[in-house]
Amino acid sequence: QVQLVESGGGLVQAGGSLRLSCAASGRTFSRYIMGWFRQAPGKEREFVAAIAWSGGGTNYADSVKGRFTISRENAKNTVYLQMNSLKSEDTAVYYCAATTRTGYPRYRWEYGDWGQGTQVTVSS
Image (cartoon, rainbow, N blue to C red):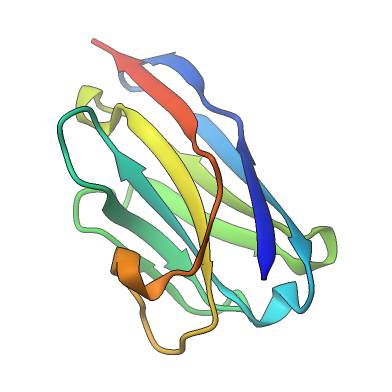
C-alpha cells in the first residue's frame, strides 16, 4: 500500500506549461509502476501516462504523446508529469496512481492506489 498526494495543478493559458507532482509514502515505492490519469466533467477517468519503477519505460496516451513527459525520482518518492503545449481539452482533474503490475498498465482497474487528484484548467 502506498499513499499518494498530487500537487501542482492550477489555471494556465492554452499553449502554456504546468508540472504536476505526486508525493508517495509507503513501502517499496521504487517497485511500483506509477501512472497519471485524468477525468474531465462528464467523462470517464482516462489514462494519461505511466512509468516503470526503473524510470526507463514509459507509456503515453495518444492525446498527450509529444506534449507530456512523465518522470520519477525514487529517492524523493515522487513522480512528475510535465505538461507542455496545453490545450483546453486537457482540462481535468489529474490523478496519480500506483500499481504492482508489470508491462504497460493503461486501465483504471490495473491500479490499486490513488491520490485525491489535482485540478488543471486550461483557458482558451
